[in-house]
Length: 169
Image (cartoon, rainbow, N blue to C red; front, side):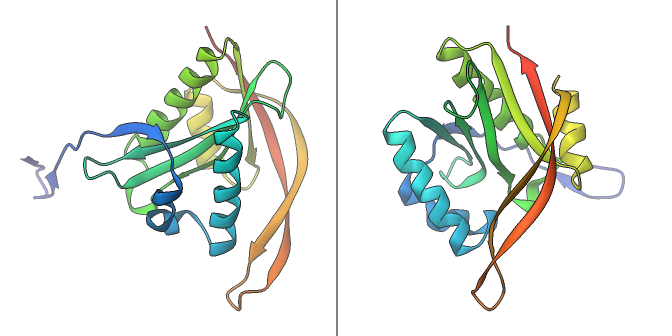
């Protein structure tokens, strides 16, 4: 541990990247609503079938602090990253980079040489991360999904995403 001039302590904690499991879902409540976690559980079924990979960046205690998927059926010849999220209190600590690099390794391991993703136009911080990691915008696409409101009802969320890709070597 070291102290900065302002007296703040800095602690370095190793992380492990592994497959997300159904047993992890209760610890992932930070990533979205109960409805979102139901969708993640469905994606874990797809992972068991080999259609996707769903990764977790975990602390030494095994708690997921970043999660995200790679879909191998969304775009021919590519792995499509989606549902990427980092525990809000740990954003800007490099965990998103660890997650994305691990996802790219999974894509390469399947013999694919391109990664794709969509980022909401209203999320310039995430887009800046993807650009730093070598992703290039190539278009935009309207997207929508159901979100859970505070009263538990569902409403359709609509947005526009910038489509980005990266050649993997």
